[in-house]
Image (cartoon, rainbow, N blue to C red; front, side):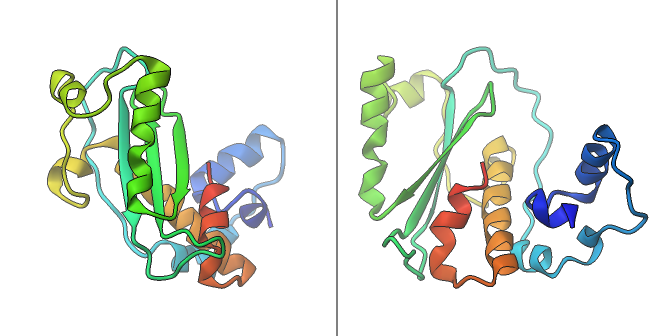
Length: 173
């Protein structure tokens, strides 16, 4: 029951949460045989521990997911995940067009930062394809996988059609 209500957490995280609330922990949790979790975890990305120490906010990593062959109920085809390297705070945006990623220009104006091109080069930000060895070391891939897997798990649990993926994925943060 708690596994479903808490959004399908890992069984170790569930045990810690339940023990902190003085709730009896069952010997075998539903997470051990949760069908929705099996459907939601279609792949697993491994990542190496990073030795990089971040000291300022808004060192952003972004991952664009899509084009999804199944348009969402609101017409979205892309999911943009951006995470702050220092705080791990994550923003998720559902996008209809790939060109909507130009929100970086808005960030540049709001933060008075040069986010594109020269800013990337100046601050050592490397642009690369997903699922390549270099990006597996970036923390965002792990977060992005969590968002997608949890969203798909929530859809499977609720027996909702795939075109509600935008609603499920946007509720995972």
